Length: 383
Image 1 (cartoon, rainbow, N blue to C red):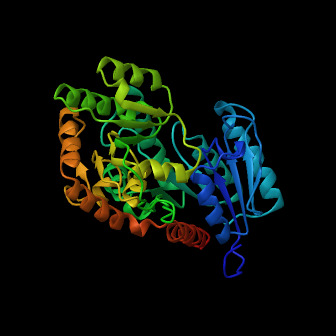
Image 2 (cartoon, rainbow, N blue to C red):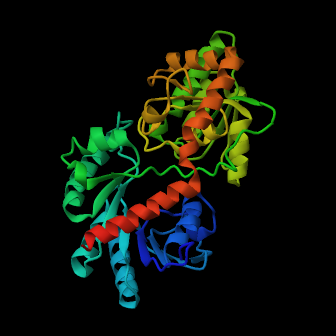
Image 3 (cartoon, one colour):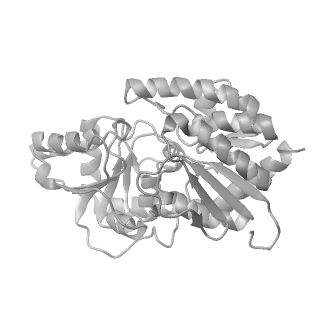
């Protein structure tokens, strides 16, 4: 229910989240906590969780509906669950988190045709843009091209989370401007992600899934280059994923394994914010991102960032003023790392300017904006 007591209707979310139902509190948990204030009820249909289901109800008016089968059966799970829900209540609009084989979107199209339920197709990340990290990403980008052409006809609109992907990618895919909504997904709790008076114990921090598009191998390579130049740079590596063993083996080969502290998981967002604050800089080496969220979280903590020109970074970062860019080259990254370490006063100034740059993405205001866009689209779709 909304803060002002008005009845705002119900929201159906077709999600890719595999964490909530296991009791873990990730980013989506925080989004739902605030979004629940703007709707009477939210039902979330999601894939099979990565672990046993421990909860199905959140915040009194949010209900989780995780699948029990695999991804190949997900369209059927969405349709059967949604039909049962629609027999009990109406929904103003649905959201469809669209990626991979676009099973959420395919189900959303069928629900729209069967029940007249409008939906917002949400593209949080276009794989392979601005550059692919693997052949698989090339395929995923092609599938995205195919999907958005369908969504442009069927969805109330297509959501992207930064202007670059709206202008450079969806436009090149043939999606008309009036079918695109730029709704950032950076929901920063500035009371948590803030500067802290803690000792700097790491030179560099990187955070994320240990997968190909994050290019953490470039960071390891840069550390190796710096070591050969006589400079031992310490790294806090936070995350887990399929490339974990490869990255640690690369650190051994480059002779920097002793400089790398690996934390597979940090229990709370407060722990994550402290990790940013304990580091002299955050590095993002990704080849494609929607945000990236971790870079903006670090900026909110006053931690300088060195990043590739991905996602919303090209809109937020002013090179040399509130952060530094590099172009997917380990030697260039090594130079940027040295530049931050060698000039603490400049680094502090970049950190302060970085926090100001991300201040507009304060969590409550951004989720309110998201909710208002959903209500606006629902009203437009129903005439």
